[in-house]
Image 1 (tube, rainbow, N blue to C red):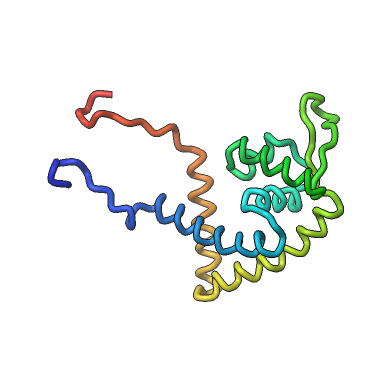
Image 2 (spheres, rainbow, N blue to C red):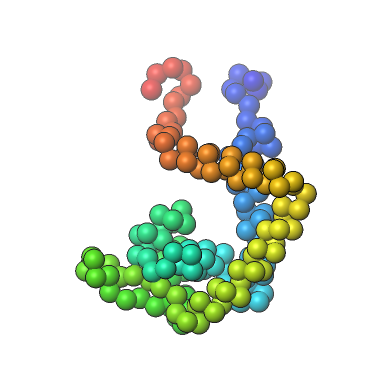
Length: 162
């Protein structure tokens, strides 16, 4: 408890904070490669990576898979289109939306970036044993899956009345 009787939050011990800053540190390190060699921002690469992995998707699907804000996804899609790395085509299963897919140039760039991203991943994971790597992946997946089951957080005034 703090001097005022409020619960103390020690950020360095708060797991959501630890995960967030770790993610940012890793993303920023990898982003240096995307920016310097390919002129891509993190959001643009994330959209490109998902499209390279899954094929054509709607912007709504991209937003869901990347967990990025829809405005950020829209902006990234526009940049990729302007650079000729992605193109839109009509969505035959839903006439109200379009599908975004990588162009041949987008696939070629994606295929050049993937080995570099994997190299950074290997260097990042180097201090961990194979078993620790698998455990880390399993734990992160469990936390991610569980996070989808949580209801919205509620804030009370601390007096017991909601």
